[in-house]
Every structure is written in C-alpha cells, then in structure tokens.
Length: 105
Image (cartoon, rainbow, N blue to C red; front, side):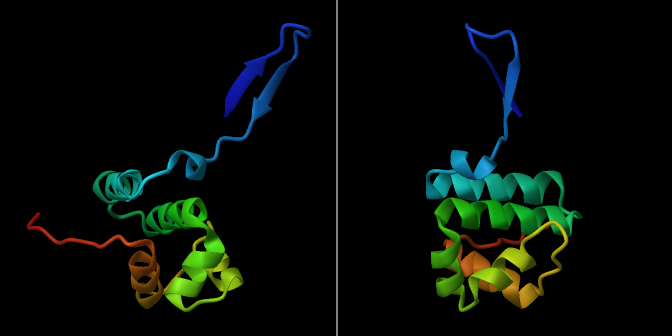
C-alpha cells in the first residue's frame, strides 16, 4: 500500500496498490509473468493471479473475448480462489500475447 501525507492534516491516507496499473507495455507484462514463473514456479494460484493482473491491465472484457470466455468466468478463474484448467490458462496466455517456454532445469 502506498501512503500519502497531506500538509493540512497529520492523518496518513493509504491507497490500495494495484500492480495492473504498472503494467503498461507487452514487455512489462511478459517480464512480470516471467518473474512469477521464475521466483514461484510451484505457486499455481499466484501465477494465475499474475495472469489476472495482466488481463486487468489489458482490459478484462477484451481479454475474455479474445480467449473465448465470459468476463465473469475469466475473473473467477484468475481470482485468488480460482482454479483454472490448463486449457483456460493457455487461452488466456494466447489472448494476452504471451507464451510459455520450456528449458532444461
């Protein structure tokens, strides 16, 4: 959370941080997803949330259309409690213009 102090008041106001607001270019989006895949490769829910962050940055409605899903089902699949199928993950990745690559461990 970001904090901001006002000169008029001594109260601290907190603002919710939304990573989607920071993902402006395809390169930033790909780097963000790559960081999740590298740093937390076993965190399937975290990786799905990262895809959700990227989808929100792009525009959830457009990504849902491009993936052939309803906006509601996309939100649900990529939420913290979601459990998307691998097929859904692949559709979303394709719609976002990102791809997964394999390399020897």
